[in-house]
Length: 502
Image 1 (tube, rainbow, N blue to C red):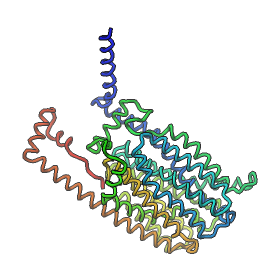
Image 2: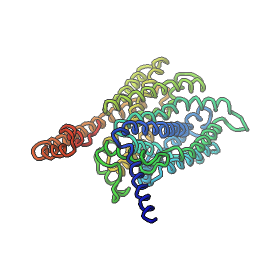
Image 3: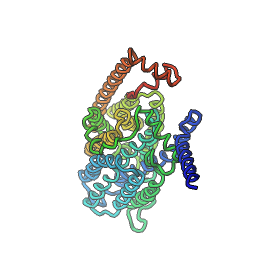
Image 4: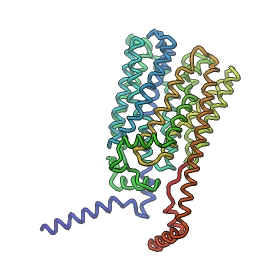
C-alpha cells in the first residue's frame, strides 16, 4: 500500500515538474511567450496607465484650482503659491530612493503600490478642507510621500517583466498616462469647476479635490488585485507562465534577473552610487526636467493666449493628445531599432525649437503651435528610466535603487522649475524659457556622454569575446557545439553576452 502511495507521489511530482517547464519546449515556447506578454499587456499596462492619470491629476489639481480662486480663498501670495507647488518635490524626490529600496526587498509590490495610491488619494481629498496656507502646505508635503512610490516603482516593476526590446514601448504606454492626464485632466477640471460652484455651499475647487481624491482611493484598492508581483510569485499566473517569465528575462540579460541571497538593499544602494552612469543619469534627468518644468504651469501658459477659463482648459488638451501619439510612435521605433540617445534627446531639440518660436513672437497662432512642440519633450522623458534599466541592468537591487536615484534627483528640476515660471515674468515668460532651454542643452550633453560610455563598454565586451573565439576558446566552443548537436554559428550566438542599448 505504502509503495503504491510512494509511486503516486513520485508520479505527481514528475507531472508538476513537467507542467512547470511545458512552455519552455521548442513547440510551445513562441506561442507561450506571446500569450504571456499579451496577458501582461491586458492587465499590468492598463492598470499602470490609469493610476498614472489619477496620479498626475491629483498632483496638478492645485494649478487648475488656482484659475477658480483657490489662491484668493486661502489668501495666498505669489510666493506662497509657488511654494506649495515646490514643496511637494521636497518629499517626493528624496522619498523615491528608500521607496524603491523597499520595493526591491518586499515580495508583494501590488499591495505596497496599491496602499500608496489609497494614501495619496486620501491626502488629495483632504486638500479640499484646507482654509489657509499652513493647511494646504501640510497636505502638499504629505502627498509627496506616497506618490514617490509610484512612477519609479512601476518602472522597476516593468523591468522585472519585459525584455530590453519590449521595455521602451511599455514605458511609453505607461507614460501616456501623464500625457493623457494633462489633456483630459484639464477637461475634467473644467467640467467640475464650471458645474460645482456653490453646490452644498462649497467652492468648485474644493469639489475638485474631493471628487478626484475619492476616485483615486477606490482605484487604489483595485490596484492591489490588478497589479502583478514578481515573475516567481504572481498569483494570477500558473506555474508554467511564471517559469517562462523568469527564463526569458534571464536569457535577455545573460543571467538570472534575481538578487543573490547575500545582496541586501543597502548593497544595491552602494553599487548604484559607485556606478558613474548613475550619477550622470541623475544630473541628466534633473536638467531635463528643469527644461520641461513648464508642465506645472501649462494652463497658465495657455491662458496667455487670451481666452477664458473653460476655453483655456479646452485648448490645453490637443497639445497633450499630440504628444501622446508621438510618444507611442517614438517608443515603438526605439524598441524596433534598439536605439536610445536620438529617441530621447531628439524630442528635447523639438522643445528647444518651441521655446525659440515663443521667444520670437506673441502672436496667438505661433504661441499655440509652440505649445504643441513643447509637449513632445516628455516623449523623451518617457524613455529615460527605460534607458537606465538597460544601462544598469543587474543585479535587480542595484537597478531598483538606480531608478529611484535618477527619478528622485531628477525631480529636483521640477522643484527649481516651480520658481522659474514666475508670474512676474508673465505673459511673455522669456526669462523662464531661456533657463529651460539651457537645461535641455545640458541634458543633451550628458546623454551624449552616457551614449559614448555605453559604446565603449560594448566594444570592450566585443574584444573580450573575440579573444575567446580564437585559439583554445574556439576549440572549446566547437567541442560544445559537437556535443550539443548544433552548428558552430549557433553556439557562438548562444555564447554572445549582453549588450547595452545606446
